[in-house]
Length: 307
Image 1 (cartoon, one colour):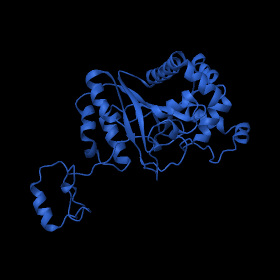
Image 2 (image 1 turned 90 degrees about the vertical axis):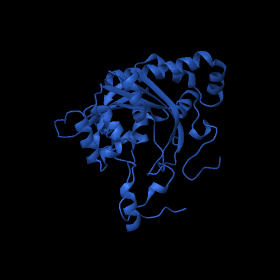
Image 3 (image 1 turned 120 degrees about the vertical axis):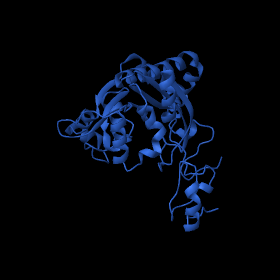
């Protein structure tokens, strides 16, 4: 049922409440709820696995991920699976190198160990699938900054050929139309874009020095692939406590709600970085299947939770 609000009587009772969460008069009284505080599904295990990384150096997590993003596309699910490595003493360049090597390893393994299946997919699902995957193995991924990507998309010939619905101006979060144009029409291979605007990236991403135009960017990277767009995303993590708490406040959040995470910096940390790979999108990528709902047994999407 509906949770009660804190009235004057309940406020007096809560003065002796020993939990870390204590609601004020007029607020919802979550102390009577299951976790005795507000609780939400996480969009990944990354923040938690950073604690393990600080103890064990190189770690990863693989598990279900939940997102309430109201996206009705062939690439989005409300529940999917994510592989998330986290490495200590790792720079953004190291992060990109590992992500590229990991994707190539997965592709190589599938080609070598699932040859009959790949021939089937090549014949009946996507003509030329095996050649596309071999192109991934045979070429280094293209690398460019977000600013360079925007400049590329704004060249007259690309503006005309791309016919983009959303104008590619600096500061937007690149859409699938921009990502696929870069990988499918310009470079015809996976592309890594780095140094995104800080405005739409997470608080834990390490800040870059302000550029010549006074714009703030972060040490983030996305690996874009043909047919899908973003397949992997990662960053170097902010290891300066003062900077990170400032960013948390700037985004309208309370550092106290991230106390355990901030403590990883407060009591000593190391430079570290990591990335996330959507397993279901990886399956799409190596099989040629067009719709992500066809590569997971029980797809759950906005407005669809039958199973």
